[in-house]
Length: 167
Image (tube, rainbow, N blue to C red; front, top):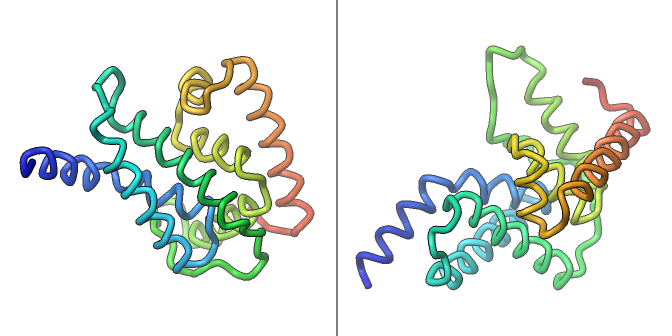
């Protein structure tokens, strides 16, 4: 049992950014993000015995994390809260200028106005997954993934314009 736990913890540690990003996409409050993070890790541990290695661990992890977030979001019946996000942004690249952190906060605010499926689409798109991989993760056809993603990107642009976020 110790060997399984050690392997699982190493994989989680290697790919924990996925879980952090999913939690940040679905919850705007830092405490809610931590709760969702813990819920996702718990569900990953419960589902780990079913991971057969037919796909990359990260692909399987995306699917479990997104499904957990969708169920958690519905179960808790959380509404989009338009309060400011925590200023603690995980990803900062100083090469892209001093305003990247601010632009990233605006993006997260805009994403919080999307529904749960749209958030999953944008998350997978931002993770540079192909339309085929997005479709596999969401259990939809590749054509459907492409159409939904394009509509979601258009909606996100409208939200950004409507709220006056500057990019």
